[in-house]
Length: 370
Ligand SMILES: *Cc1c(COP(=O)(O)O)cnc(C)c1O
Image (cartoon, rainbow, N blue to C red; front, top):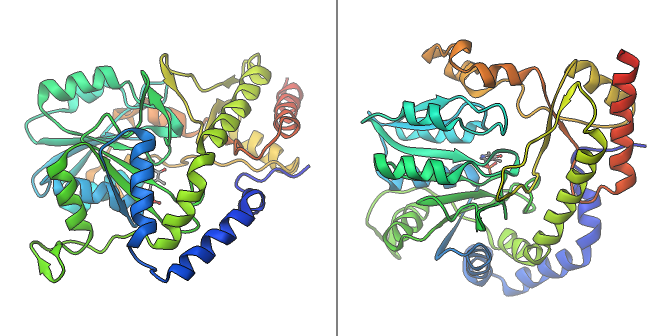
C-alpha cells in the first residue's frame, strides 16, 4: 500500500466535473480579477463562519501582514506569537518593523501557553497573533480575558482552522481579525494561492480592503499607499464551488482522527493529540509525539507511508532569528517537542483501511523495538 501525505489528484478526481465547469464559467464571464466570483466568495465565506466582513486577499501571509499594518503596528512595537507556529506570523510582524515575541506552548494541547502569554505582555505589546495550530483553537476564554484587560487586540491565524470552533463559535470570529489561507493543502484549498481576512469591525474592514488594493478609495484615488494582494476570479470561483463540501471533508478528517485515537491509544511510546473541551478540532494535521521519531518515520516510509514534521525547527531557533539569540531554555516545551512530533496522513480521501494500515505499521514498529 502507498499512502501519500498530500495527494492533489485523489482530491481533484472527486470534484473534477464541478471544477471544470467552474473554470469554464469564469472564462465565459471574462473577468479574471475581481468581479462577481470574488464577491460571491466573500459573501459565502463570511456567511458560513458568521462574520460581517470578508476581504479576499492573495494568500494567508498577506492576510496577517495587512491586519497588522491596518492596526497601526510598526517600528518600536512588539507583537506576541507562538514559538511553534509557521513563519508567516513572525515574518509579517517583522515586515511591519515590529518585533516578534515568541511564547512557549503548553505541552497538553501544543498551543500557546496562556500563563506565559500573560507574562509576555508589556506596554510595547500592540497585538497578539494566535495560531490555531493543527486545526484546534486556543483557549479563547482565558486569552480573550487577558487581551481585554490589557487592551491588546487579537489577530487569529486560522490558516489551519477552517470551521474549527470553540464554545460554538468558529475560528476567525473571536479576534479583531481572522486570517485564512486557502493554499492547496489547507482544509479548504484553492488551486493556487489565496487567502482572506474576516472581521466584524466596519471601519477596519474598509481599511483592510483599501490597503490590499494599493490604497485605492475610488478608482485612481489612492488615499494611502498599500500593497497588491488580491484573490483572482478563478481561485474565488473554485473556492465557492468547494465551500459546500467543507463540512463533509471536515467530518472525514475527524473520522480518520477518531480511528487513530481508537487504534493507537494503548501504545505507551506515543502521545496522541488532546482535544480541548467545548471545541471542535478540524485536524488539519494529526500530530503525535513519539519515541524514536526518526526511526519510526523511516520505518513508515519503507512501508509506503508518507509522514511529515510540522516543523523540524521551531521559529525561535531558525537562522532567520539568530540575531535575537533566543535560547532553548526559554522555550522548553517547544524545544522538547521538536524531536518527538510526527504528522500522520489525515486527509479526507483516506479510508478506514488505509488509516488502519498506518496504525498497524506503527504498532509493528514499537513491537519490534521491545
Ligand atoms: C499555511 C499557513 C500560513 C500561510 O498561508 P499562505 O497562504 O501560504 O501564505 C500561515 N499560518 C499558518 C499556521 C499556516 O499553516
